[in-house]
Amino acid sequence: MAFRNLYKEPFPVLSMPLILSLGALILVIIIVVAIYILFKAIKYLAVNAIVGLILLALLKWVGILSGMHIGLWDVILTAIGGVIGVFIIVLLYFLGYDI
Image (cartoon, rainbow, N blue to C red; front, side, top):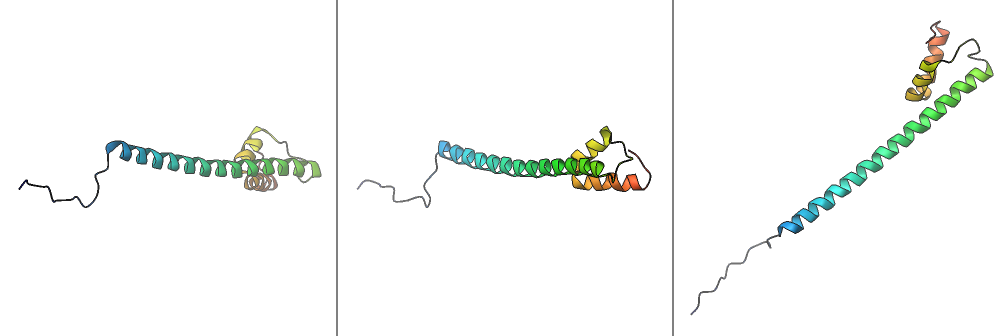
């Protein structure tokens, strides 16, 4: 009687290319999700900056900030801070500080 291997492994052995393919697929999914979240945040920041710049120009046009000279730092603070940056600029203007 010939000796037969009666032992069966509980899980099939995965080959190395299959493991690498699954790892690459998971990595691609993670990168796509990260890019989606990044673009979503950039879109929010861009809209906030544009609304802030429009609000700053509108306040200057209406006359609330008529005596204020809008300089480079005002535009930079508004572009970075958005609407909150405009409120900071208005608050500093009414307190007597000109950026």
